[in-house]
Length: 99
Image 1 (cartoon, rainbow, N blue to C red):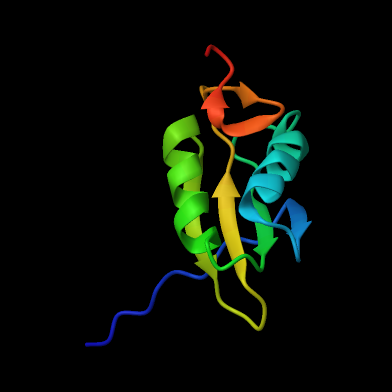
Image 2 (tube, rainbow, N blue to C red):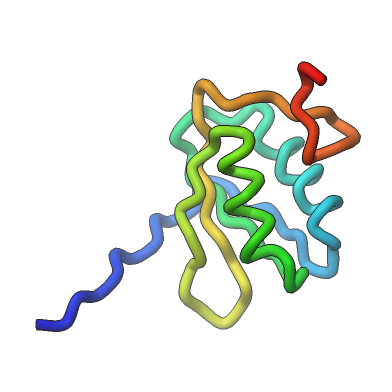
């Protein structure tokens, strides 16, 4: 029996971080999801080679749900904002707002 991964959910919002380093990408992602409803599916286009490591780590730190890579021709990752996520600083994506 062959198991197939579940298809990635269709996006409610797409953040294009093509050509951005992860720090800038995460700041752009934070701004984009700032007013998003919890449970919104966000597809993040990320060409930085560090994105496959940085996006899940950032989601773990903030409490957002990292849904994983989205199959296709471009490097896209799915994220779902959480209602109880920790806020990060607007100028530093690796620092929570309470620091």
